[in-house]
Length: 223
Ligand SMILES: C[S@@+](CC[C@H](N)C(=O)[O-])C[C@H]1O[C@@H](n2cnc3c(N)ncnc32)[C@H](O)[C@@H]1O
Image (cartoon, rainbow, N blue to C red; front, top):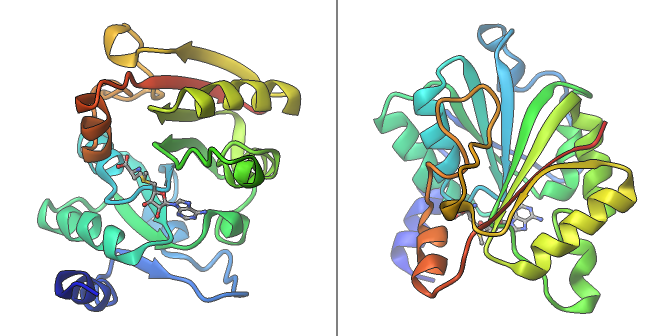
């Protein structure tokens, strides 16, 4: 394994803005995001956050909201968590966990928005159930979101974009925005935020664009 990756695995364990999980544990509601200092702040999740580029940018312009980046890969989280500390962003935290277990870490109806930023499209038929907009994930999001809370999807995959529209509709949710070329649209995205879906371009997104892909954006509610 590359040395830099190994160093990140070690460094990330020392960072105060990262929470690690163990299989089978749930200490609800004793997690840092429910500490007294964060009471009254809207909570926004970025699922499959990687280096947390969207969370960091949103957090910088919305100090009244708490952003939680979630990913299973701690060496990616390490990059975002160290940047958040270097920038003095106290309203960003990271959680290392598989998204399949997300309900163990957040109280029912305590989340205002969820961002799915370039989730893996899982193009093979047998892995469709792993898409972050498959019905079991939508069940979990509906459990966590406040009524009217929005899920945002940014993707370069037409297949995942179309699948998500259908999955949300057959689940009983409502698509509130759907654009096939976000950067050519005038869509804002994001609730009560000075930044929207168009204003932040992650490294993954930039790479997709440089290969000629257009970025698709979908917003939906589940109740
Ligand atoms: C294509 S990357 C996108 C990263 C980032 N959101 C961006 O825009 O650059 C997908 C990320 O989702 C994470 N991921 C995929 N499936 C996951 C799961 N089931 N639980 C936790 N993280 C997951 C991967 O580790 C990876 O960091």
